[in-house]
Amino acid sequence: MNPFDDPDGSFVLVGDDDGHLALWPTFAPPVEGWETVFGPASRQDCLDRVEEVDELNQLDRAS
Picture 1 (tube, one colour):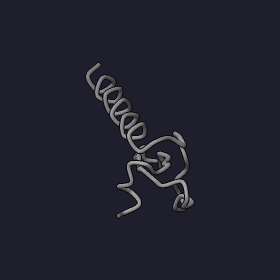
Picture 2: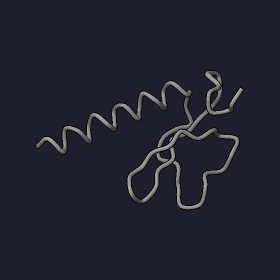
Picture 3: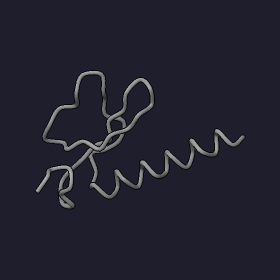
Picture 4: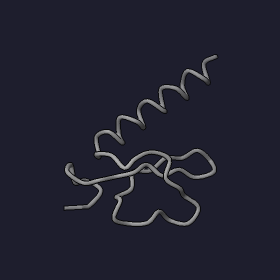
């Protein structure tokens, strides 16, 4: 199984200077230029957070 697909794994969200987010397993350090912005949490909690951030960004663009 791909470690990024493990429903029982521990994950963080990492972000870069451009505001991009990525799901990242906690057993691996983030790639240079990315830092942890949420977590550690379950895979689903991290994905839910991405949705929340996306919804907030859409509201900001609409106003």
